[in-house]
Length: 63
Image (cartoon, rainbow, N blue to C red; front, side):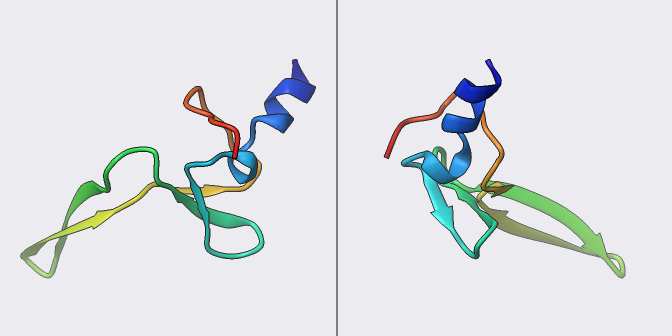
């Protein structure tokens, strides 16, 4: 089981967009909205989930 998970990690997935040697973005779905408050001002930002290359999920698709 451990070998299967390692071979289906983010860095081997067609949906993963590498940003550096170890980190990237999952592009499987549309960016998610993030709402946050700074100094009484509400801001909204959209971004893809950030992952490290060894992460994995059930939506894996081989490159």
